[in-house]
Amino acid sequence: MTGPAVVAIPIRSFDDAKTRLSGVLSASDRRRLAEAMAERVVRAAHGLPVFIVSDDAKVATWAEGLGVEIVAPGVTGLNASVTAAVGRLSNDLPPDGRIIIAHADLPRAVDLRVVTGAGMAIAPDTARDGSNVLSLPAGTDFTFCYGPGSFDAHCREATARGLDISVIDDESLALDIDDPADLTLLADADESDVRRRS
Image (cartoon, rainbow, N blue to C red):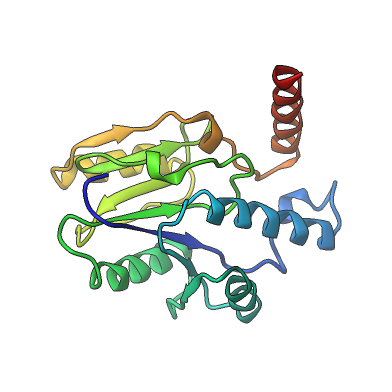
């Protein structure tokens, strides 16, 4: 990473987080899980300035408790929110700066700083479908394509913009929690870690 970097973590709300887990976790448990994962992602910034992208007052209070700043995008939808936040953050960065956009549901995140490169760097999920962590040079004109198939969509967008692409296959950034099967994968990964340490 050549220039200064900042981290943007979009969080819509904790109150209605992870509804696809409602069959196995209560609303309060889902909230606690979402907050714990988001805090882990914040810690994975390792001192880089972190900005939580949210218009939710409770999320803002949570962020304040961690000592990180809020960017209130004032728009709805993940792609629009990230676009608004990246535009604002780019204004305060030099041309060699980078913006790292990280999902908040990465329970094994270790170090977001590894997601870097000459152009667009992207750490996909385990299925190479989603874009768990993405970084871009500050001021890049880029159309975000979060949602199903975002990994391929973001790679096509980078190619269309003439950006080099660095794919970062990092095990600690690949697992995101969306449905009960992901909780099983998390438990298996944690058990594997315990076995390796013992």
